[in-house]
Image (cartoon, rainbow, N blue to C red; front, side):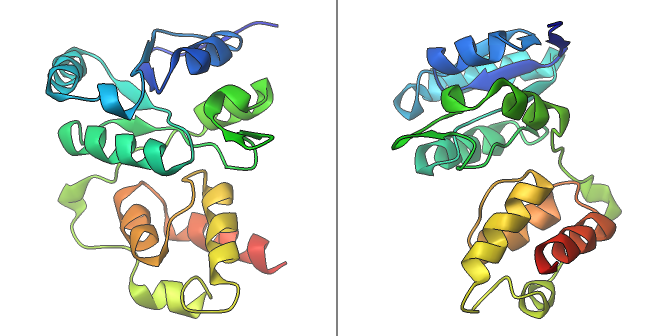
Length: 185
């Protein structure tokens, strides 16, 4: 199998993630060595790298992965994001990118999410979009948000975080409506 060539630097949580990605991609991959290793020194190094390189952040779909994503994104706002669902990243009770199949890893890296250009102004999505589509305060809203995150390849978010994610990532109204239709069918 020929490996997918990726020019961006890929940031992952640990060395097992590096091993999993190297099976399917030809890229420069950096292991962050978990949340405890994401300190001022590491962040400074990543900021310097980001000045001359594009980067993709590919963390586990768990609390620690979201926390790492949040910290790095606050320092490198233009970083790209690759997401994998909890279902695809779980083996027994262990959640991590290293547990995902080669096909799932490739799929995530083929659907990298970028941030919306803030110069276009205004938010595309509002709380009404979440309410009208059963993504908040409904009996199955959590499941609907999980499905939406999987379809849009942005991961799972609670209602408040979902609204922020939809407005931050380069998700179009058309993509959102298509995903909602898929959930409803």
